[in-house]
Each structure stands twice: as C-alpha cells, then as structure tokens.
Image (cartoon, rainbow, N blue to C red):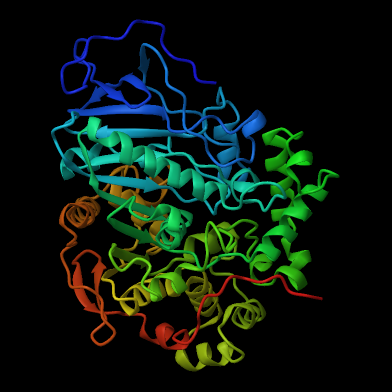
Length: 524
C-alpha cells in the first residue's frame, strides 16, 4: 500500500529541506521526506503518492489525501500504473506492476529547494480516457526541465471504468478528481522541489488535452494553475444518461449492475476486460450511442452538472477561464495514424467516406458542405478530414474561440511537419507533437514516427516547440500573437515555422455554427 523506507530521517536545515546523503537529492514534502536521484544534472523524484490507493473501501471514491510516513521514502521508481484496458498494448505494460499506489506523481527539477521559484509544468497524458501511464519513456521530463529551466510534473490518474464509468453510488469523473488532487499536491508541495506554486501551467494532449479543457471549466480546479496548454482536444463530452447506459452495458458483461456495491466485487483486471469487450462491439449500440459508438469511444468526461457543470466551450465562452492564459493547437493530419491502425490507410471506399460524412459532418448538410468545400478530394481525404475535424481539429479551434469570446486570451498553433517514419505515410499525425514537446525523439512509441536516429530537422523543430512551451509557462508568451476573430493568426510548426492565418479555413466555415454539446443518449 504505502510502503516506506525504515531508515531514520536525515536532519533538515531551517528551510525544511533535508540535507542530501551523497549526491542523492532529498526534499521534505508535506507527507514526509523523499530521496530521489540525479540524472544529467536534474533532480528526479518518481512514484510519490499524492492520494491514498483507491482500493478496498476507497474503490470508486473521490481521491483521499495521502497519509504521512516516517523516515525517508525512496522516490526512484515510477508507481504502478492504474488498471486499464488492452488498447495499444497498455494492459501488457500494466499487468506486471506491483502494488496499488496508482495515484503517484513524478518530479524533474533543475534546482530543487524552496528558494528557486521556477515555473512548473504539469503534464496530463492521453489515452482515450481508457489507457495511460506517466511512466512511459516518452513522458520523461528531464530534457524539458534541464533545457527549459522549469520543474516538470507528471502523474497517474484513474482511467476506464475505474476513472470515468458512470457508476451508481460513486462520484462522476473520478479521473478528473484525481487530476485536481494532483494539482492540489503541486500547490502544497512544489516549492520544496524548486517550483513556484503561483506559476503552474497544466498541459496535455488528446484525452490529456480534453482533461485540460475540463479543468478550465471545473470550479474545483479554479486557482490551481495560471496557464494551460491543450493539445488536440477531443470534442467528446458525455451526458450522464449516455455515460450511464454505457456503464450498464459494461456491468452486464459481468452479469452485474453498474453500482459500487456490485462492481467493487470485481477485480480491476476483470473490470477493464469488460470495458474492452463493450468497446470492441460498440457499433451494435449505434442507435442509442450515436457517433461515439461508430468511433468506439466508451469513456469521456461527463457533464454531470456538479463536478463538470457545463461543457468546456460553454464555460469558456461565459468567461470561466478568462484569467487563465491558454495555448491550444492540433496536428494537420489528426486522423492519419488512427486510419492506419484501422487498416484503412489508402483503402477507404466511396461508401465508407459517404458514411463518415453523413455520421460526423455537422448539421443536416455536413456531407454536402464537405464535398462542396473540397471538390477535388477523394474518399481517403474526405474520410480523414471529417474524422479529424469532428474529433480533434474543430473542438480545439472552438476552445480558442470560446476563450476569446469569454474575454480571455488564447494562442493557437498547428503542427504541419510530416513524421519521417514509415516513409512519411503518417504525415503530421495525432500524437506527433508529444515527443517534439518533450524532446524525447528516440525512445518509446514516438520512435516509430520519427525514426531511431532523429534528423537535425526534427531536433530543430523540437527545440523550437520546447522553447515555445517553456516560454509560455514562464511568461505567458509562446512567441506569436494571440488569436483573434479577424486575423486568426496561428503558428505553423514545420521545417520553417511561420505565423499565418489559420490554414483550415474551409473546415472552420463548415463547423462555425456547431456548439459541441454534451453527447446525448438517443431515445429509441
């Protein structure tokens, strides 16, 4: 559960920071002393619990503050990832993990100690709200911290049914509540690691970007961060009725009801498997679940009226985050990698394209508007465009527009650089921005996109993006003008980055009247 070292505490100085033993950095957090490691000049602390393990009587509950420990706790290994489904092979990475301290943070600091006052960047990983863990090599914060002069924090949060299932007797959006708890830990502890709790930037991609959008709309998260970066924000936010219907289907796989009483008897692994089973056959519920069934999206934040009162677009347009500086953007070819995973790259038929336009195009005439707007596009391009726009590109743009409408400021970017891996077939695909922002170009899954030996071009682009992100976290300016509804200036990240008018103008016009409401349960 909360195993700690049995060795006695080292004496601490007047600042509250423990004296280090040898070259190993030590700090004293609110719950106890920690000993980390030093890697290439950066102090690293891994696997620090920010909440009690959500198991036993705390299963499906809101996160509880972690208990204090005696002695000096070693913080050199990532905590075990939360239970998760089998998508993208994540279950295999998680199954051998030991312990149930799922809710842990990791910190990289170039200057640990309460007097440094460095900007703080808190990362929220993606994974379709179904998978994800902070211990993946592509999320190592060492280079970003070392070269950007910032403190980097990553953490785990509950995913799948554990974190986002609408379960009777449990609070909604437990994964989001975990994120709030992690940010509260940062507020209360990060000064000891060299960070400034008044200069916190939260940043995330895909489901992490959607989480950032949700946090901007959540009263519980107000005041926990000063700036936000939302990368490739998905437009899927569920109504309580839709989320409850999906949870019922998952519980039915186990012959149970979607209640805390019933599901608490099921091991996390079996519960994740039940969610996988429903996700694999969601199309059979298309008449009830609509678009998310066609895309096999079983989990998303729930607009429950309490934890998440309204959608992020509604909240921002009403001024909920006008005091938070915002950086948002997407990749040009968001859908390309997902199409490849579906086995449809270069294989989309006229019928498949027509179906995608009908299901995902906005309004009753979305298909016609796409065909009129892109008259030379074949089925592959039309399929990719409407999926990219519906799931990521237009929700991201609309978040910036909502922020400006609500009296706030937003900077917008688009990544247009094509990944060189696989002969460039993936283009500027979904997720390509993550290794570029962290600078981890040759490790983990991103190596498949960028190649095992990153080119000077890739390194230069990564340096530019890292500078933009850390510059934004430091002083609120990523290096290009804020977005407005007249000029619509955005930063294009490519071999030669440029500032220009938003390039996806045809898509913008097609979607300009869409509101991205909470996705309803379709009555039949």
